[in-house]
Image 1: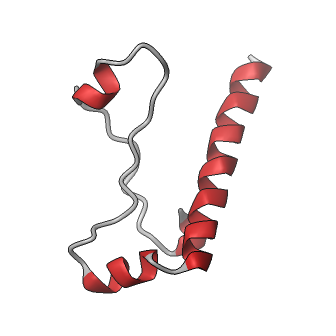
Image 2: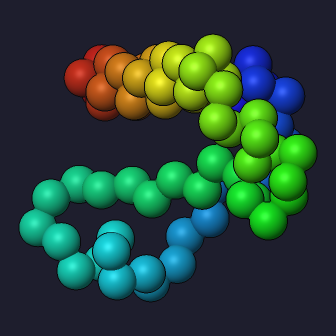
Length: 70
């Protein structure tokens, strides 16, 4: 998320139902806080949404490339 200028709060793990009670690999993303009006407006912009999608795609691709290399 560095490309977007957002703060990286690192990976957190928790026993959250949407992650725990599924039969397939899953992730839960919290991109930012919609209670921050400036961020909420920013997240409505098409170019920001495209950057987020691209960043997530690259992160998932990198994960599977590393996993395949093992």
